[in-house]
Length: 430
Ligand code: ATP
Ligand code: MG
Image (cartoon, rainbow, N blue to C red; front, side, top):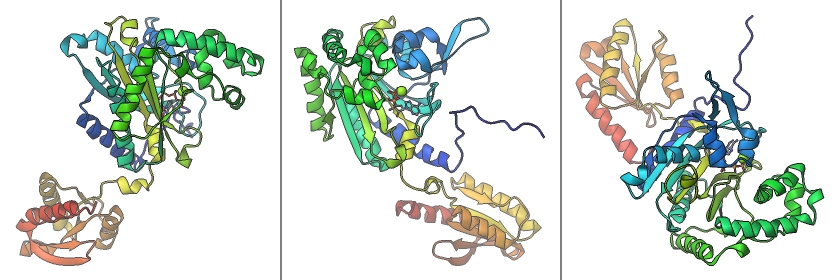
């Protein structure tokens, strides 16, 4: 027997009915982001490695050890994108967006790749939906993004949320803070994990992002970055908080949240869900301001703010049987006899053309098993066509929830069904 092939470790297939849950969540994002003025952008999955090492930062976990990087046939170093922001910024610069419009608002959605240690909610191919706004220096824009996320999760029923915000300040502020933090950590440097000891040399703020328990405990009382902020940075952070309060979003300031990527300046935020199924991977979205990134990748000096949400983690937080998210057929057409089996094709085509969701059985099976299948699919109506109905130019129409059946003229069916299905939809049946 041939060897069975399996998907790559950490990269998963998405099958029905789970895909229905994903579609539901993704379409909620699309609708909502459009309402806030964000338009979709699609960038390639493969980019040149430089983009990420320059964009995300050499001394980050992603660039140091998580990227899928390989030479292409021409020996150029290529990387499967580990996140979306660097590609968006590249596109923003490449297409001179700043000359076309003062403010650009984009969202993207798609797979990201990171060679990580796998756990629930942590995969090697995972999906992010992200948003980027370019051209606004005011803190109201980051507050609005947080408010949009808050609306998103609440509207899909993920309501036990904690919004964490912080400011990582300007480059100068971080310089001051780096000194304070390094001096503090010097006291117990030897007790930190190897990674953190190295981080203290290369990128000290990263120690606050360490997931190792002993490091977390040692760094619990580290100095607050908020004490190192300049007056301007403090005022900006206050504006963000004021805007959040005005928009009715509850939040907590967490001075130890610095985020895993290098490009942030000023406000950073995370939303944590308290769903048990997430285990320790409870951060469902992360983002912040990155005013220097566009310029550092060779573009104009344009401020920017964005976030990326993890789709798998959102889905894990969504209650409910995935079956509930599957679209049920409006009508299932059952046939009795060979002539009716052909006639039902025409009827189904007519009903589909009228916009209805229609199913029928292709296999030659009994009436009973056709009805069983209609039931299993959760069809709202069943139409039966047999020789007698064909002769009388009628069909039998059964309402599956009311369990009532009536005989109606064949020509009336599309109009009749359309009206009934609409009535059900408007009545909030599904
Ligand atoms: P974490 O601290 O959990 O590793 P991160 O700081 O690397 O997250 P970002 O790069 O900011 O996260 O990504 C934003 C969101 O994308 C995360 O909050 C999470 O929901 C999701 N995410 C990140 N990495 C993964 C992964 N490997 N598998 C699934 N989802 C992920
Ligand atoms: Mg990570």
